[in-house]
Image 1 (cartoon, each protein chain N blue to C red):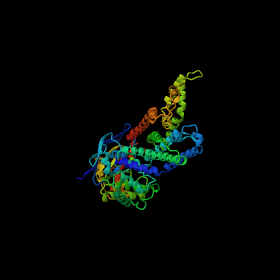
Image 2: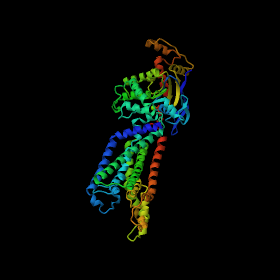
Image 3: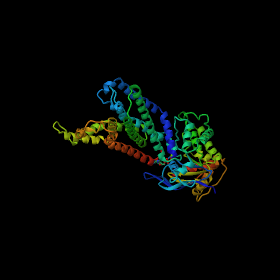
Image 4: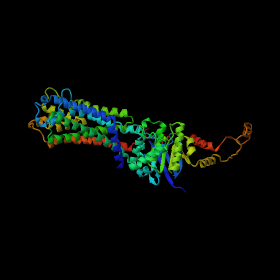
Length: 282
Length: 313
Ligand SMILES: Nc1ncnc2c1ncn2[C@@H]1O[C@H](COP(=O)(O)OP(=O)(O)O)[C@@H](O)[C@H]1O
Ligand SMILES: [Mg+2]
């Protein structure tokens, strides 16, 4: 079995008597790209903030590499990078200066820092703009700088909160590629929150679906798919047929007694169904 | 510890290169220089009747022509300087979206607020000390006035008092920058409090004192003194008043007390100058009060900041 990098046990958070996060249990293994999927207001950001020790849980706990996030936040934050939901920078400083501040906060020696900053700016494709003030950056560039900020402290795990919101499709593509690259080349375990299904589906190895503060499904896409089939299809069975059947044949099948549903299904769409199912129920 | 140091130096670099700093410095410098200049034009007129003993200090406390004195400027505009450095310190970090990035680095949360407070106070200190030195240089060079040792000591104490005074306004600005998410709100509330403590409190103190001890034509001196005492008590909740009393005692070696009530008791004393320790005896309650106000204000900011949610919403 692989090593557990992040583990949440019965993690719960109340905001003014509202249970925003409800007894969440999560396990993220080393090397995974874990997709934390859920609609707006589901409790993703709250869970992430608790994982980083930036918000205190009402009950339960989170551990990252065995360090308790609430009791040992500095140890957690030394090995964990965080890309906040609306990442911001000091606009009158250059990208290089912004990253410099982060390396200093991480107590990285100046000499190594210079090198590292150059390296990560190159990885995210901002080497040319390193000495430009961040105020002049586009949203997509800022997001890539955010990824550089994540990389610069050489984390073991990176937690990215909605890393693709508000940027154009090309920008989204770049960010997703970067995340995969980060995982493969730098060996960083990744937790990625999103309310956008297709992105999660595209790059994540495991997913957890959160709805109204509760985890409603967790595992690889196939596992979730099977679970869904199991619960959904008691006392019924599925007949697989050629997808190119003509409408006439489909119509006559529908008329057969006992058939109550005909749907076109492909493995690519199944996650979407799951997502819709839970979000309707939730 | 590393976190505090890094935040401090980042903030220092920001301040010293900022437009805010350069403009403020230029304004204060212009005012100070013109005060010295005008005084130097009329030096014989101003000092004919004052003892030559504290010539140097007198330059700081004398108002020249239509221009008020240097200490007037510090007591009125010091608060504004503190507010300017404080009012957007935390909420701008929040709205810019930099706060969660900074606090997700391996530093304690209080490193941010402590670093910001110390860096702002240091910057203000640098500003103040350079202006005092410039005035000192002008007095030496242009007017040929050489301060004696005691005057230098008194200037040092004045500097300390000013730092605490401006530090109070700074922590108040920081407090509002924590409580209010919008920088315009925190600026507005800070300035309102400044106006209250600098101006309205004078009216309120008189009104309340007159309510408790009404005065009329046949009031005895004792009644008038009582009225004055109540008024002073109310006034002393204002840091502006506390600071003014401290500065008067520090820079006016002959000042021994404030208000009529004290005059009644002290009028049989000889009008000689007080030593530094005697001056300090007169104002130590005000000094302690000012320090307490600053610390309380900072402590409240600290506590709220530590417990506040990190998110911008
Ligand atoms: N500081 C707060 N006080 C009260 N309620 C909050 C606070 N922060 C978040 N919430 C509420 O918690 C819920 C979950 O929010 P969040 O974790 O941001 O969801 P997500 O990131 O999945 O969109 C929302 O209903 C939100 O309104
Ligand atoms: Mg969120």
